[in-house]
Length: 233
Image 1: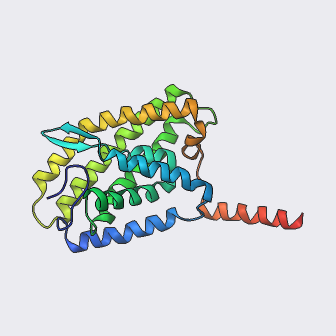
Image 2: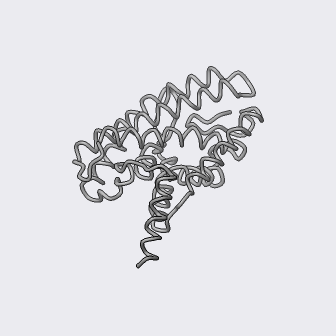
């Protein structure tokens, strides 16, 4: 049976479903690893731990129990590095506490990664591309981004169960989606509070989401120009 926390267990999906998802997830992770700097690793590790611990905080909703996701917060803080934290966190959850599965690791990752990236973009749009972000603005942007990430994750999980399930999971898929609607409000408040605190005490944690991302080709060209200048010196 699928767990009501956007964690799909082994045997729930058809082989073609989890196989395609595993391939796509691997590509996303490889892209996320591109030009990873050593100084980014502690931040990724911190968000991985927060994402993992969130699975132990359960909320009663729609007659069942769901737990916090925090993929929206991961996306807001890490930006395009979010897949790294989410995949490692999901693997630890599967190994240590039995959430999810091994064959479905790819699909479980994708239904959290894509909304996390959406949350990162949404946060930047609402907060504005600015160097100084007020706590009030950060709370608004974080609340909306966190809530949207949960709704999208629940919707994606429900869709996967219906399309690629080995059985008729439509009833379960409906429960999964409905149960996460009140959780979206709760998590929105948590993410909003966290981003407001970061805006006041540690604004550099939000810098990655507030910066306009550069295309890979452009960033590569910029790096090459800097190397040439250093050589000329």
